[in-house]
Every structure is written in structure tokens, then in C-alpha cells.
Length: 118
Image 1 (cartoon, rainbow, N blue to C red):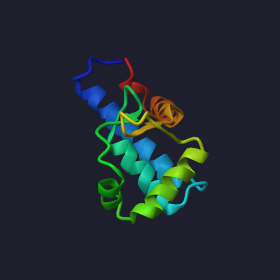
Image 2 (image 1 turned 120 degrees about the vertical axis):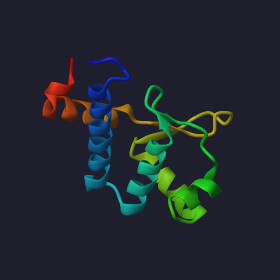
Image 3 (image 1 turned 45 degrees about the horizontal axis):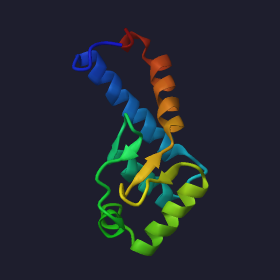
Image 4 (image 1 turned 135 degrees about the vertical axis):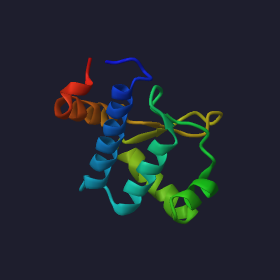
């Protein structure tokens, strides 16, 4: 792939995020609140670790995704049961995100935009 700061790399990354969020939005196995929470977690994540960065806690995050704290907890539990997230240890406060979602988005963009690779 191109240098990290090249225009082609930036374009590839934009396509990658679009593909990831399109996949989340189109997932029939996810409810609307699950989609909102998963999208919110990915927007606060680091791709390298596939983990949220600086998770603000349930109260602030619930406000961010426009839902009540109890509903957020239930939704996080549901996403965990589906294997899409996993809580980090207590000290890290946050969530690991299933990297298979990102890998699927990467493969999709790679096949749709081969000109952006190499």
C-alpha cells in the first residue's frame, strides 16, 4: 500500500470507513440501537488495537448515542453476546471491537478499488 500520508492511502481509508459503516447500517441482525452503539464505538476506536480510546463512561456515551443509560447497558450486553464487542479490563474502561468487521470492510474496498493498493 502507499505511504501512510499519501492521497491514495487517505482515499483508501475513507473508502474503508464508508464500507465498515455501510456494513453496520445494513446488518439485518442488528437492531437500530445496536447499530448506533456499534457505530459510536467504532468512531471512538483505534484501528490498530480495534479498541475504544478514552471511553467516557456509560452516562456520557449514552448521551453521545442518544439513548438512556439502561438501554445503553442492555445494548452493550447484546453486542457482547453477539460477539461484536468485548469489555476491556476495568482499568482500561472501554471495549475491544471485533476486528473481523474491519477485515471484511478492508477486503471489500480492496476488491472494489484495486487502484488504491500499491
